[in-house]
Amino acid sequence: MYKAIEIRKSIRSYEKKPLSNKDKEKVSKIIKLVENKKGPFNNSAHFFFIDNNEKKKKIGTYGFIKNPPSFIGGVVENNLKGMVDFGFLFEEVILRLTEANLGTVWLGGTYKRSDFDVEVSDNEIIAAVSPVGYPTKKSIREKIIRKASKANKRKPFNELFFLGEKLQPIDENHKYYQYLKAIQLAPSASNKQPWRVVLIDNAFHFFLKRTKGYGDKLKIDIQAIDIGIALSHLCLTLKEDNLSFKFINNKPSNLENCEYILSVQINKA
Ligand SMILES: Cc1cc2nc3c(=O)[nH]c(=O)nc-3n(C[C@H](O)[C@H](O)[C@H](O)COP(=O)(O)O)c2cc1C
Image (tube, protein in one colour):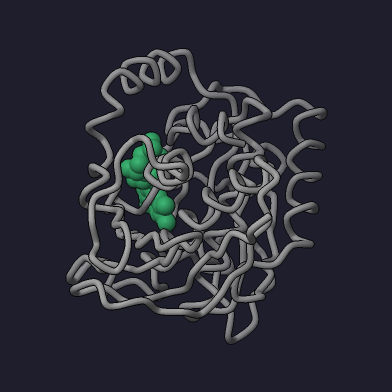
């Protein structure tokens, strides 16, 4: 998963060809697998997969997405915890699709149920969707260029991560450095990177630093999704390293202008 975290990039331009049957099966399998899981706040999500080539009314009115052959998306309870859990679960889908060499891009915002013909109860909402397809050659080239400049596309460690109650900087020799790196690489809406983490002993305490006014017009708490994505990157890499952990509600001293969400505690061997 760490490798998928490193190579995943938003793909907005796709080859003009439908997904192969084999890849369609892969997408369905991945969705099914993650649908059986729960997020840190115990919500699960329902996912859908729509083949643009089979659908009469084509999805793809998003002008900036070129030739999307299919879409996935998900429905979840519309509250902060639901959004965190959605971000957590849908990012696992995105990373597994990345491992299968399929291109994706998170599209958050407000989608009507009629856009996708899916069932949505009154307390639920379509939290996000993503096209699924084969990245164009151009976007592969773009990827290489973007990779070279990757370092300056995320906020530096000293803005995002803090060590101990005294909120000290974390250096590259810290034993959990790579897990913080996995968090830093997380995608976020408009690349706002609203996650902040205080690391105390074996616990990663997650805070949300909201961008003032951002997302106010949306029906969903889009920056709560971002927190779920960051949590997903941490938990998937911990699992990959066979480190067990639990989610706890244990707010340490405050981070200025931040909202505490929850903590991930690594179990000591
Ligand atoms: C919750 C969420 C919503 C997003 N919505 C959009 C969107 O509506 N349109 C878009 O082009 N990109 C959208 N993105 C993609 C981000 O702009 C992108 O992840 C970020 O700029 C980082 O770039 P990267 O994904 O290539 O690493 C969204 C990302 C997230 C996490």
